[in-house]
Length: 235
Image 1 (cartoon, helix red, strand yellow):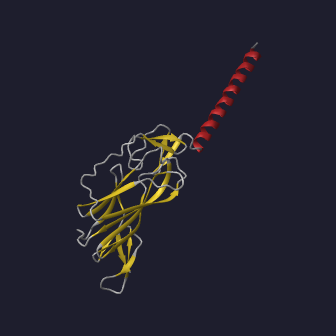
Image 2: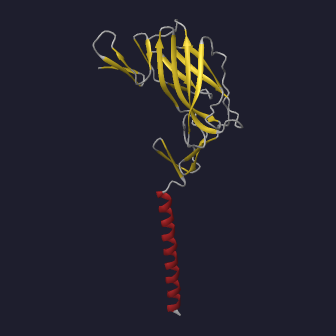
């Protein structure tokens, strides 16, 4: 009888060890995959965790598999009351489609700045929704000079029955006139349609504005200068 009881206990212990081994195995597999995790800004989040300040958005949560969703609704309403279209020529162009489920409205890149006599041209790229056959959405551009900054913004048609494919578009703003209120430290910003501001990292040197990456001559020395992310570097 004692041998039977002992054998039963051995079977129970063996079963528990097997179950523990399986549990450790699955936990290890889970830790080595990102099925229930997300990584952002060097921080590891578990599925369901709030991801702080994700792409300047609030109420963003880890959905697992490195997917982060934000519950911000479709509130793109901002006031254009202080902006102007006076002496502004605005145009837009489709660039390419994106392999993404939705556009990243915080991705804004400066492409070019041309500041000459009588005009200032700024070209930027941003993400939005386009239609079929490379159709960019209809849109309007505005600008405002505020606190030694030129702020550019847009109003874009987001009718999802017409535009449903994430894409990259370019916007070109040309402001005509000779009296731009520019001085040292001036910046060029883009305000997206959620009201978020993005520095286009332009440089102001020798009474002219340059895009990041532009090269130009020093005003008084035999040097070549360049605009590097908003800073003038001369060598």
